[in-house]
Length: 214
Figure 1 (cartoon, one colour):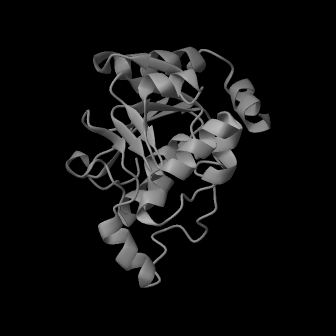
Figure 2 (cartoon, rainbow, N blue to C red):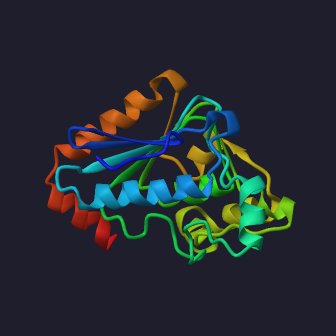
């Protein structure tokens, strides 16, 4: 098992990789260290033939992730530190060809929603919210959001999220096809694990190929 910081947890349960963004006191906002840890975890997941599905979630019940910690990110970027992302146009998880399930346990905003778009199946707790507030702060989303989002949900809805910066609730996210299921928060991880187990029962090469050519 590769070493991980306390702020990003990586656990293997049989054929399932469980990854937890573990900074609940800061709405699970990402630091550079956490981004590098997540990259390492997904690289290991991709290379481990025993692992077939990953579940990505956030610690606590307030947030999946609020995206980048701007208190760290802005000074770092101004100083020339790319925080592990030399190419900010790269779509998250675009080189991972095994299924990724997101278990969204609260606010999924800004970079959190950018990461969500790189997952394949999304389960949301009833109290979850989704939004891209970057324009309200005078910046724009990265990670290929302007390409991915209009492909995943209707154009007009994607543009409303991108241009207004206003969030939507879990039911609205389900209605527009951004998430697959909305469940009570106490059923969130159980539902995600059940989906992962169903996928694990299928042929791993067939599953991987189905995702790769989609």
